[in-house]
Length: 120
Image (spheres, rainbow, N blue to C red):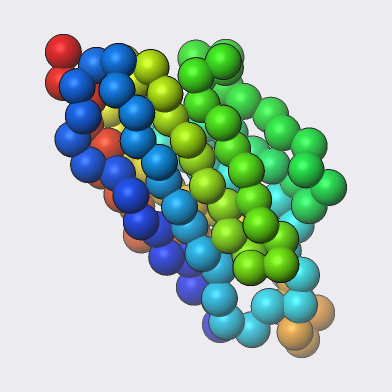
């Protein structure tokens, strides 16, 4: 199996910064895209940022120029540096990874989620 374990998150004032980290482990042959999604109360889960195995990135318009996604492919980890946080960034943040397992079967895996709360 594959597990994604997130760390980081918490409570911060508007304008502050937080860093989220996620590590994938288990029966992994290769990790393709890794990304972060978020879900605010009463809203659908939305893409925040994604990074490919080659390092290409894509961001939601609402976080461009404020958030930075990065990865360490050797360690199967992905980070999300969040700067200039706004109250509307408050949500549960989920790590996601597209994984090819050692049996060469592919799947999309999710972390358990970590709460980010930005106070005004």
